Every structure is written in structure tokens, then in C-alpha cells.
Amino acid sequence: KPLIAVKEEPEFDPIPKEKSSISYGLGVAPGFGSARQNGESISGNTLAMGVMVNLDLPGKLTLGSGLGLNLLNQQSDVSNRPMVGFNMSIAPVTETIIVRQTQVEIPIYLKYPITRSNSLSVQAGFSNFYAFNQQAELETSFTRQVTVADASAANSFRTLNEDVVQTRTLESVDSRFYPLATMNFGLNIRLLQAEKSSYVLMPFYNYPLRQFTGFGDNPGFFGASFKVNFGGGKE
Image (cartoon, rainbow, N blue to C red):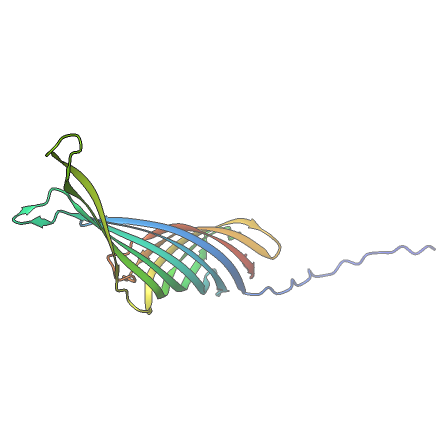
């Protein structure tokens, strides 16, 4: 009799290969913030680039950390009317403090999934800053009146308004470490899932807990980071 090949089915499902509980990622995060209080207007922008490491904890939580490089630009504007004799000057004087700072960021955060597929997750934590290479300058701008001779008529003078801008460099703080400098909140939105990687967009808000420039208050920053994750058991 002819032999017929028969495919034998396994009695049990094969055990899947164990996945790593650690994932790695790269990201870039631009942000912008502004605030106004006590007549002072503060605005700033930041660009962050870095790497991160996520560790899946028992349950649904994920513990993460990493290392980032932030480039901060901040500007503070204050307008006032100085005293001239016993009267206030009519022309206001605007003082602008411009600060540029480089930061090494070490975040610590927790992630919790909202959906079963982990396509949405919330993230919260703190960031520690090591600030260095800070530069600060003060710009004072005002309008003054000057009297000049009128070329159209002899022995005649006229008054002109002249804009004046004075700039001087301010003494900045040296390199310094700021623990728990900001509190961070984010919403991870997975855009694409590949075989060994995932692409995530995270809108975020950073709330300052400490003043790390030394010139005025630091505003909170809104922004969005784009991250690429590699490996791991959840993503």
C-alpha cells in the first residue's frame, strides 16, 4: 500500500521565546513656554535630545530613566518708568534679560498603559539638571528726545525721538547640579509598531520646581517629543 505522509500536530502550543523586559529608545523634544506675573513677561524655548532605558516592572508599570542634552533660551522683559527729578519719566524703559544655558538632564519616570495594546500610556516623573555653559546679558532700551538744528531755517531747532539700546554682560552662575528641577507629565501615543521597534509621539508639560537660571522665574514648558523604542516585552 502507498504510504501517505501525515503531519503530526503537537499536543501543546509551543512556548514562545521569552522577551526582554528592558527596552531602549532615542528621542528629540522641542518645547516652548511663557508666563506673565508682576509686570514681568517671561518666554523661552528648549530643544532636548537624548536616550532612554525602560524597565518593565511586575504588573503594568514601567520604570524609566535616561540621559539628555537640553539647549535652553529664555528671555525676561520688564517695563518701568524711572524717576526724573521728582517726576516719573514719560518714556518707559524696557529691560530685557536674555539667558542661554546648556543642561544635562537625568529623568526618572513611571509609565502606565491606558489601552490593552499599550498604544496609549501616561507618563509622569522628575528631571534632574546639571547646568553649565550659561551666558546672560541685559538689554536696556528706551526712547529719548534730542534737539537738532533745522536745516530748512536759520537759527531754528527741532526735537527728534531717538531709540537707544544698551547691552551689558551679566555675571552668570558656574556649573551646578539641580536635583528635582522639573516635574514632567506626558501622554505616549504610538504611531507605528514594527517587528522590533515602535515610533511614539509624546505631548508633554514640564513644571519647574526650582529656579535653575538665576535670573527671574522659569516658565513651564509645553512640547512634544518623538521617540523610537527598541526591544522590550510591551512595545
